[in-house]
Length: 294
Image (tube, rainbow, N blue to C red):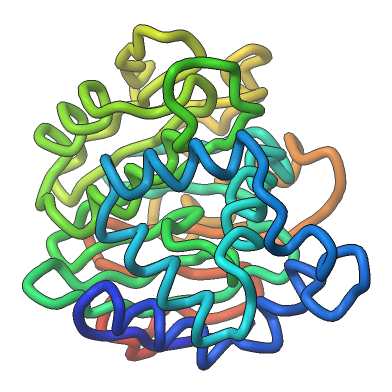
């Protein structure tokens, strides 16, 4: 999986991402196809409203997106359409676990995802897994130990168009633990649809359900918190006493996640205590972009 490093103000982050992932971004939006070129600058209500919401409620991400489009040589509207298309989940599930062996978040990884290390100017550094075209990650952990993972859903019509999973970027930038991040995710404007899973190094583990206009907090059931399909049909979770150490915990989480996915795929484990993440088949990567042993 490709690993990129972005640093600086929002426009610098976008420039770094657009430059390092130029080929991946152009392929993702079909930049070189006749149909894409025809649509590239054509206005439509959804992307116009999304652009308005980004500039108003997510100004740093709006600046990032604009800079990324320039660096990759694609129209900004193409990246806005890609953001709306991300509402279709690969596997609609996320798992959280906390126990004596540690704290973990497990989530499927979509095809063509990348690992991204960020050092935003004046904000928390983080390591994340993201789509090449996105400002906000699928999941990540910052240097303070806050983890945010997203479960996308189709967006419902409402007065806002920006997806709720953009909060993942805001929270990793700003917060050290779950409490202020949860308040942010419950109170800021965003479209209806999707869910977020939050954890931190203290063992806090909560979810945010945004499937209705009034968002609600989802509490862990004992050691576990399952979002998405797993919340509707609780999976057969391993008994806590079977997870005697971190290695057994990681294996059990990955196996449980795989059993819930509609097709075999790649899984991501995020560790808030170690400030690190691991894509299945690879080693751990810490927020400072150094590989560490499991």
